Length: 113
Image (cartoon, rainbow, N blue to C red; front, side, top):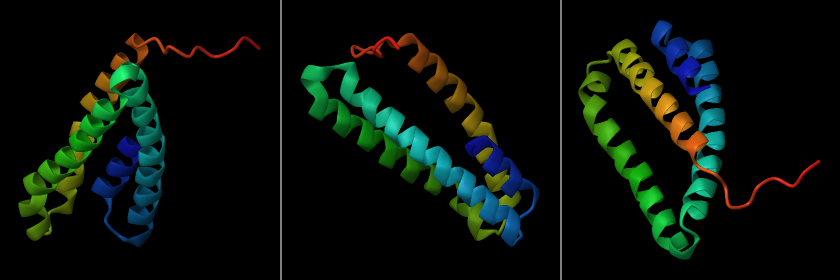
C-alpha cells in the first residue's frame, strides 16, 4: 500500500492522486504499526517494556531523520523526487521486514481450525 501510494504521488501531485496516496499510506501505517508493535512485544517477552520503547524510538528517530533528509526537496517544491525517494526506500524496508518477520516463529501459534 505504501509503495503504491508513493508511486501515485510521484506521478501526479494534484488533489485526487495525493488523496489516494494519503489513504494508501494511512492504511499501510495501520497494518505496519500493529504488526511491528505485536512483534516487538513478542520477541523477548521478559524485556517487553524495553523492546517496545526501542521500537518506538526507532520509528520516531527514523521519521525525524527522513524528514530532515528530504526537507530541502520539500522547500524546493520538488515533490516528485521526494516521493521517488519514498518509493526507493520502501522497497528494501518491505523486503527486509517481510524476510525478518517470516524468520520469526511466534511463541503464540494460531490454534488449529
